[in-house]
Length: 407
Image 1: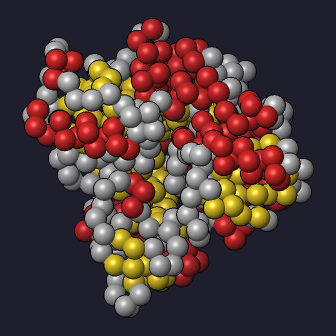
Image 2: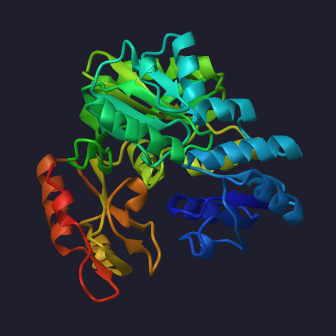
Image 3: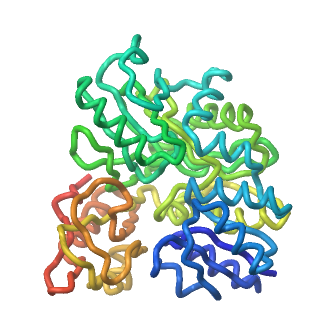
């Protein structure tokens, strides 16, 4: 068998490894010339995963048996569309793909099925009259983009007009969503839907860089105590979403704001969270979501057994950089061998250039710390922040330690 894998980021390394372990030949397509997953594929095409015609051409030329991706929104929509056109297997159809990757479609379904979400409007161009009934601060997002690209908080009309125009420029459909800001703790919930039943795998709290108008995540914190407190609330919302969108067997990512009693859904998708989320889910539940996506595509049905976390506290730390050109990492393997960190990952390649921090796509990599007490977690985290280094081509350390604040 032969698979066409879309997107060459860190999660796709694991996807390619697992496909190869099953004896499946792999073809990778990615916009970048040297994505981090490229060395793990049998063949590589430099093509945008958003270019339907190009991906269709590659699929036909390579005579692949199926297309697949994981942990990324827009590539999932391409997989669904091309698979449907070529009669190849996919765990969701194209219309469902649209509903779960385009916030305009998504919000319509939310409203139809009374799924709690923020008041909002959709804009194809800035129109102040559309804002009647909405109160500042307002959040602007492209309707069909991930990695926090084009997301901005606005306090007045001048800021809003500029933000809407920028968000539209990021959108594939030239539209933006403007919604009311909701205060509370932001949670990221990962779910697997089996035979229509939503199983909660992991809940993590998201810490963001202290910036009034951007929403760049620098940490995802799993705590068994948090899961216990919000389990029933999140499980209920997940089931309602699965029913509304007709998801029968599928992974699901839900982002929401909660005060502990109620919650408002920001957005969701029929996929696993990006970055290192697939590793967090396995550590928090024992369930392998990458393997599950492969099984689903091949017509098999994964089963969610008892959810069992490895530790009471698990933190994924994301590393951002000062301006410079990336060369290599230092001390990561050593601290992993000592048990200070349990995992680390590299999202960029040698020669990648860093400037400002605009969205989560600007991370160079990340690492994971785990413990059964907060005291132990803090000690491991402090040592990792002090000793890990991101080295530039001029030998300087690019790592923004100031962003890796304590818990």
